[in-house]
Amino acid sequence: MAGNRTFTMIKPDATTAGNAGAITKIIEEAGFRIVAMKKAQLSQELAGKFYEIHKARPFYGELVAYMSSGPIVPMILEKDNAVEDFRKLIGATDPKKAEPGTIRALFAKSIDANAIHGSDSDENAAIEGNFFFSQFERF
Ligand code: UDP
Ligand code: MG
Image 1 (cartoon, helix red, strand yellow):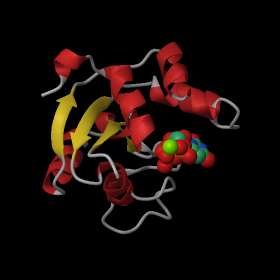
Image 2: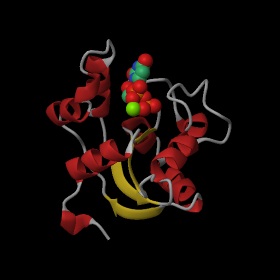
Image 3: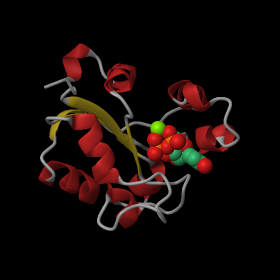
Image 4: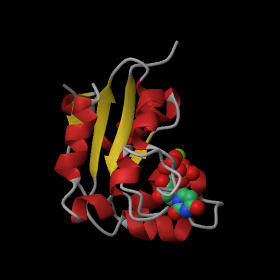
Protein backbone atom coordinates (compact mmCIF):
# COMPACT_ATOMS: atom_id res chain seq x y z
CA MET A 1 0.00 0.00 0.00
CA ALA A 2 1.24 3.49 -0.84
CA GLY A 3 2.17 5.67 2.13
CA ASN A 4 0.49 8.95 2.98
CA ARG A 5 3.53 11.16 3.57
CA THR A 6 6.14 12.71 1.34
CA PHE A 7 8.97 15.21 1.73
CA THR A 8 9.53 18.35 -0.33
CA MET A 9 11.92 21.26 -0.36
CA ILE A 10 11.42 24.56 -2.18
CA LYS A 11 14.84 25.23 -3.72
CA PRO A 12 17.01 28.39 -3.62
CA ASP A 13 15.98 29.72 -7.06
CA ALA A 14 12.31 29.73 -6.02
CA THR A 15 12.79 31.14 -2.50
CA THR A 16 15.11 33.88 -3.84
CA ALA A 17 12.58 34.81 -6.54
CA GLY A 18 9.90 35.22 -3.85
CA ASN A 19 7.86 32.23 -5.01
CA ALA A 20 7.76 30.20 -1.78
CA GLY A 21 4.29 31.48 -0.85
CA ALA A 22 2.77 30.87 -4.30
CA ILE A 23 4.23 27.35 -4.42
CA THR A 24 2.98 26.53 -0.91
CA LYS A 25 -0.51 27.72 -1.90
CA ILE A 26 -0.54 25.35 -4.90
CA ILE A 27 0.57 22.48 -2.65
CA GLU A 28 -2.21 23.11 -0.12
CA GLU A 29 -4.85 23.62 -2.82
CA ALA A 30 -3.85 20.25 -4.30
CA GLY A 31 -4.93 18.64 -1.02
CA PHE A 32 -1.60 18.18 0.78
CA ARG A 33 -1.60 18.94 4.52
CA ILE A 34 1.57 20.53 5.89
CA VAL A 35 2.88 18.34 8.73
CA ALA A 36 6.19 20.22 9.20
CA MET A 37 7.73 23.30 7.57
CA LYS A 38 10.63 25.74 8.08
CA LYS A 39 13.08 28.00 6.29
CA ALA A 40 16.76 27.02 6.41
CA GLN A 41 20.02 27.21 4.48
CA LEU A 42 22.16 24.12 3.89
CA SER A 43 25.93 24.18 4.25
CA GLN A 44 27.86 22.55 1.37
CA GLU A 45 28.49 19.62 3.68
CA LEU A 46 24.80 19.07 4.51
CA ALA A 47 23.71 19.56 0.89
CA GLY A 48 26.30 16.95 -0.08
CA LYS A 49 24.90 14.56 2.50
CA PHE A 50 21.29 15.10 1.41
CA TYR A 51 22.18 14.33 -2.24
CA GLU A 52 24.66 11.53 -1.43
CA ILE A 53 22.74 9.10 -3.73
CA HIS A 54 23.73 11.33 -6.68
CA LYS A 55 27.44 11.39 -5.75
CA ALA A 56 28.52 9.52 -8.89
CA ARG A 57 26.51 11.69 -11.29
CA PRO A 58 28.31 14.41 -13.30
CA PHE A 59 26.17 17.24 -11.92
CA TYR A 60 26.74 16.40 -8.22
CA GLY A 61 29.27 19.19 -7.50
CA GLU A 62 27.10 21.87 -9.11
CA LEU A 63 23.99 20.51 -7.42
CA VAL A 64 25.63 20.75 -3.98
CA ALA A 65 26.91 24.29 -4.69
CA TYR A 66 23.48 25.39 -5.92
CA MET A 67 21.49 23.79 -3.10
CA SER A 68 23.66 25.55 -0.50
CA SER A 69 23.58 28.92 -2.32
CA GLY A 70 20.41 30.29 -0.72
CA PRO A 71 17.47 29.52 1.53
CA ILE A 72 15.27 26.47 1.15
CA VAL A 73 11.85 25.62 2.57
CA PRO A 74 11.66 21.93 3.56
CA MET A 75 8.27 20.40 4.36
CA ILE A 76 6.70 17.07 5.30
CA LEU A 77 3.36 16.67 3.53
CA GLU A 78 0.40 14.37 4.06
CA LYS A 79 -2.16 13.07 1.55
CA ASP A 80 -3.33 9.68 0.28
CA ASN A 81 -0.78 8.31 -2.22
CA ALA A 82 1.47 11.25 -1.29
CA VAL A 83 4.73 10.37 -3.08
CA GLU A 84 3.20 9.64 -6.47
CA ASP A 85 0.64 12.45 -6.39
CA PHE A 86 3.27 14.98 -5.38
CA ARG A 87 5.65 13.94 -8.19
CA LYS A 88 2.74 14.56 -10.59
CA LEU A 89 2.12 17.98 -9.06
CA ILE A 90 5.76 19.09 -9.49
CA GLY A 91 6.31 17.69 -13.01
CA ALA A 92 9.43 16.43 -14.80
CA THR A 93 12.97 17.26 -13.60
CA ASP A 94 13.57 19.33 -16.76
CA PRO A 95 11.00 22.17 -16.79
CA LYS A 96 10.99 22.08 -20.60
CA LYS A 97 9.51 18.58 -20.33
CA ALA A 98 7.20 19.30 -17.38
CA GLU A 99 3.43 19.19 -18.00
CA PRO A 100 1.80 22.65 -18.21
CA GLY A 101 0.46 23.76 -14.84
CA THR A 102 2.95 21.73 -12.80
CA ILE A 103 5.08 23.58 -10.25
CA ARG A 104 8.26 23.11 -12.27
CA ALA A 105 6.55 24.26 -15.50
CA LEU A 106 5.37 27.38 -13.66
CA PHE A 107 8.44 28.27 -11.58
CA ALA A 108 11.62 26.34 -12.54
CA LYS A 109 14.41 28.21 -14.30
CA SER A 110 16.39 25.22 -15.64
CA ILE A 111 17.00 21.48 -15.16
CA ASP A 112 19.29 22.22 -12.19
CA ALA A 113 17.51 25.24 -10.65
CA ASN A 114 14.15 23.51 -10.89
CA ALA A 115 12.24 25.15 -8.02
CA ILE A 116 11.33 22.14 -5.92
CA HIS A 117 12.29 18.65 -4.71
CA GLY A 118 9.90 15.73 -4.24
CA SER A 119 10.78 12.35 -2.71
CA ASP A 120 10.77 9.42 -5.14
CA SER A 121 9.65 6.64 -2.74
CA ASP A 122 8.04 6.13 0.66
CA GLU A 123 11.39 4.98 2.02
CA ASN A 124 13.23 8.10 0.82
CA ALA A 125 10.37 10.34 2.02
CA ALA A 126 10.93 9.03 5.55
CA ILE A 127 14.73 9.36 5.34
CA GLU A 128 14.53 12.91 3.93
CA GLY A 129 11.90 14.06 6.43
CA ASN A 130 14.06 12.74 9.27
CA PHE A 131 17.06 14.62 7.83
CA PHE A 132 15.34 17.97 8.46
CA PHE A 133 12.76 17.48 11.23
CA SER A 134 12.69 16.01 14.73
CA GLN A 135 9.60 14.29 16.17
CA PHE A 136 8.75 17.52 17.99
CA GLU A 137 8.45 19.55 14.79
CA ARG A 138 5.60 17.52 13.27
CA PHE A 139 1.97 18.50 13.72
N1 UDP B 1 19.88 17.73 -11.74
C1 UDP B 1 20.76 18.46 -12.51
N2 UDP B 1 21.08 18.01 -13.77
C2 UDP B 1 20.53 16.87 -14.29
C3 UDP B 1 19.64 16.13 -13.50
C4 UDP B 1 19.34 16.58 -12.24
O1 UDP B 1 21.26 19.49 -12.07
O2 UDP B 1 20.85 16.52 -15.44
C5 UDP B 1 19.53 18.20 -10.39
C6 UDP B 1 18.12 18.78 -10.31
O3 UDP B 1 18.12 19.87 -9.39
C7 UDP B 1 17.33 17.60 -9.80
C8 UDP B 1 18.32 16.97 -8.81
O4 UDP B 1 19.58 17.11 -9.47
O5 UDP B 1 16.11 18.01 -9.20
C9 UDP B 1 18.08 15.52 -8.48
O6 UDP B 1 18.01 14.77 -9.69
P1 UDP B 1 16.88 13.67 -9.91
O7 UDP B 1 17.25 12.91 -11.13
O8 UDP B 1 16.67 12.91 -8.65
O9 UDP B 1 15.57 14.54 -10.27
P2 UDP B 1 14.24 14.82 -9.42
O10 UDP B 1 13.93 13.59 -8.63
O11 UDP B 1 14.51 16.02 -8.55
O12 UDP B 1 13.18 15.12 -10.46
MG1 MG C 1 15.11 12.52 -7.30
